[in-house]
Image (cartoon, rainbow, N blue to C red; front, side, top):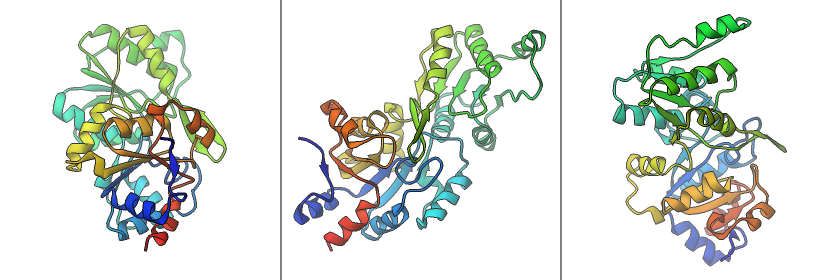
Length: 303
């Protein structure tokens, strides 16, 4: 069955739709806001859903914000009572994975300064490079020297990413066959601002794979490991009573469906209705909306 717009359902269908889920898990960028800019009415929608008795959590593939910066954005849109534990992003997932699978082990971080600060706060010993000087072939050799091996290379969105950081990550993986490559998001496109989508970081990860022949363990959407984490974190016993909201087909819709969640695509991010209609059936959502703000009108309709 083709996806239906939530505001084109009959009032009875809208009421059944709202009654069909207790928990909403929503992506952030492209759904709640844009990477640079805002989506009108999303804060009001979050508050209205909470007033209707729905629990709402947020899962993003972007870790270049600290929890405090996430909270500032929720405050900016007027979303009330959002807690730090309501937000999951790849660095949080990576920290959880490391504590469970590599406790006390040293890692190399190919991630942002904010992500590294999260590692530090959680007691994870890491190596990273912040290159300020002009590099020559001689200084490059110095930076690529392995003084102490690491047990994992961590890869995520890093806007200051440099060639030497990539080369050091590859070197660590080449020198230690037991070193695990752990990645956050796998986004190919990032919706930066209204009508401005930019390339994601997935191709840089492919560069690492090319020279190490190492597959990454993904911990961002659409990783099944993340799906199991969410079910454990939020005590999801009946996945069908949860709806996943996002603006991308693979990272959001297919991820939600693979977890057994209902799925809703919003057209406020990087995709259009034509993109949705052209997708194969397994990548199409159960429902779609112009934006999260459509829930304000829907909830008024069913009162």
